Length: 108
Length: 114
Image (cartoon, rainbow over all chains, first blue to last red; front, side, top):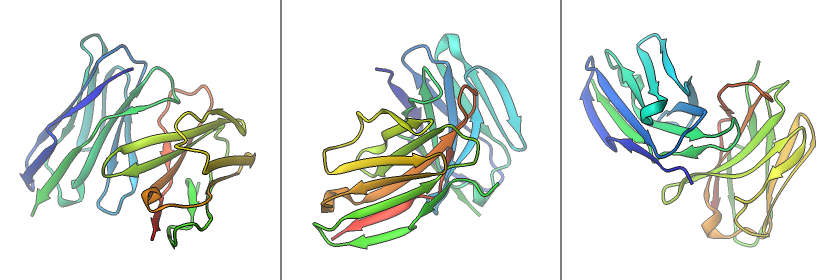
């Protein structure tokens, strides 16, 4: 099956810093999603991005499907960005394989 | 839209008791997913439905787990009898059929089996 690796596993930054989170996957996919799980446990969808680039405010994501990776960029980090960021991939809209996540801590 | 609704938000029960978790998907969504999240295993897909029909239940850990979707607006995940190793956060998610879009998650039910 498809393997998903996220890096780094942990990231501690000062408020205002920028960060890049990476997701590598082992096979072709036509479904890639980024989620943020906040400290209260809520899973929030950030991007559906099987290919290309999308931006939403301070967050943007790029997926290079031919090279089997995706990047999530967070600019001007805020404490509310803290939590775990998951990458999930699949060959359909339904069966997702989840990465282990990147735990991000933003210090004030 | 109210989003995906789950109840209860927290459940504490004793080993051997029956537990029923409930989910209301977003209106108009044809797919419904049940996930379990633990520290050891991360997020695991247990089962998903399409138009109220179970499509893949290969993630259901054992016969103690069962899920139903009697109509488009309601699903249950039942554990009988419950065991301490079932302690986890159980999420329900939904999305539209055929749409290239993300899954929308409910707030989860935090289950503790003593």
